[in-house]
Image 1 (cartoon, rainbow, N blue to C red):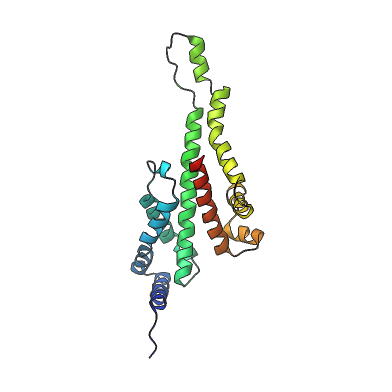
Image 2: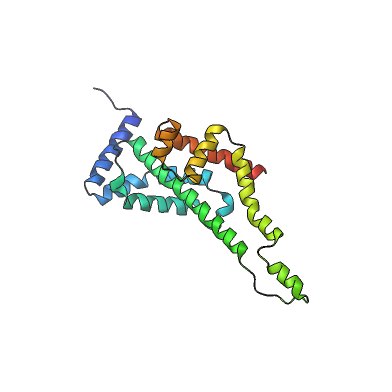
Length: 205
């Protein structure tokens, strides 16, 4: 009698849950998604910018990811463990990028706002401090973008390309895979490694 290995047993259990969830079992879907909560939390802790954690925590990102997966489960076409893992990881990574972009954009917009007039004893000085078009203010606003672009330019050619295709051109994973002549899974992994290296470079600057 052949005994299934641990990985084979795990995959069989996952397949059963996926099929049950696809047939309308909310209990199976909840159990299926919840078993990857800790895995997603590890990824979120590793990849989410620590400077943004006052705005959103890794556990919040994981919860949002699981809620999206539950809502959009009908879009998932796989049946195996590695496929659900890849799908959930992709949702989480998109959420990480979206949160970072949202808060950084909000920060830049806030820096452009004209402050309320303050009586400093000098009208000219007050107007200068409030002038959002001054060279100093522009330099502060653009500093983050310049630092980011320099860090991107220092990436290897493959890392730089996957970041540009994903974030500058806004392409989906399948389009990026086609452009780079790699599998979807390969370009997603390449993108994760590129973001990690990019983060490390920005922390060192």
